[in-house]
Image 1 (cartoon, protein in one colour):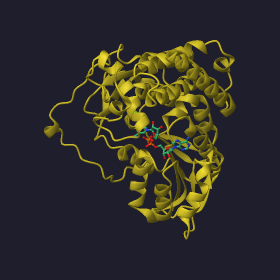
Image 2: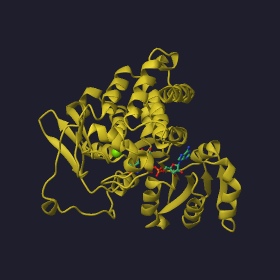
Image 3: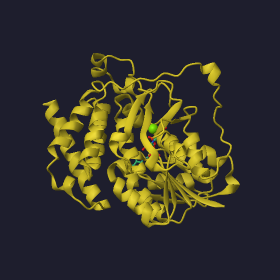
Image 4: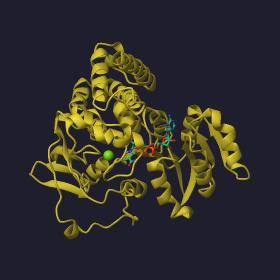
Length: 390
Ligand code: NAD
Ligand code: MG
């Protein structure tokens, strides 16, 4: 039996992971599940999957979780330290699907204890790529990408030599505002940004898709995971979301990964790797689909993409600044304190204000240096938002 843990179990990726595992419960020994505010979902899944422990991120809701688990053998725990402790419990395969920088620590701890880390939490590689990759190299653990584009590139590289790769192309659906004018985007509401044409995902990544901050994070994620130069990475708008990524080789070949927009493919690939097993996803009928479309992203409507390359040019802790500023700007947009296009303005301003800070220049990367940088960037982003509102 494989020992598995799922962090962010109550979210969109977490629930898709549970869907796959629950189809073959006898094959898995579920160690830990973590969630946030959805206590009933967390408790119900922990009981159904016979987990050893269920952890909510919210310390104030421990009693509620205990009550929901009453009568079962599942242990209850709460708080970010308890999540990290649960990640230290031996497991063979760990899903990292918490949203945001909060996902970094449990993923690192799981890698350190030698687990295979299925990484949906792209923020881990954006904020601490060198630390994550270094930890994976030193420990018995390994990282498998779960972001659909990165899983696609990873699959395109099986049996290939990275030295023959010329370019890596990740696709973007264009999100909710694909065909909107700049004026309309400036006036867009969080509600309008929260619906995605192709993918069914958590609210934060859905809004990040509309602004292409999600794709910007993924450009950084690509560089960190595949250890390629950032000039090799291209973004292509592809409204159908069926070609997830392409790898371009030095003989002119492009290897494309094509599949339905269903995260259970990438999750299942990481779950069964290096084998392929039957997965409950739609089989595409390309004759019926008929045509697929591609175009370059508009740099004026999507400044986040330029910022990602600037971050990679700077290197070091710039990714942690970028991600933290983006998270605060996203909160500001969701709370109606700034407009949709102002999110990129805030992030750019924070990057510029902190460009000379010692945090950014810190050569060594540890969880402490990343956390310190993250806090400084959040404070700076709050200040920028307040100034914009004056
Ligand atoms: P979601 O919002 O649906 O779920 C997030 C999960 O994290 C929930 O279980 C929530 O309780 C938990 N959580 C939130 N804040 C937390 C905190 N501070 N501490 C501990 N737990 C916390 O998000 P999602 O769409 O499932 O995305 C999860 C991660 O996977 C993100 O990093 C996202 O970028 C990435 N991802 C998602 C998709 C997708 O299709 N949804 C695709 C690719 C990558
Ligand atoms: Mg993706």
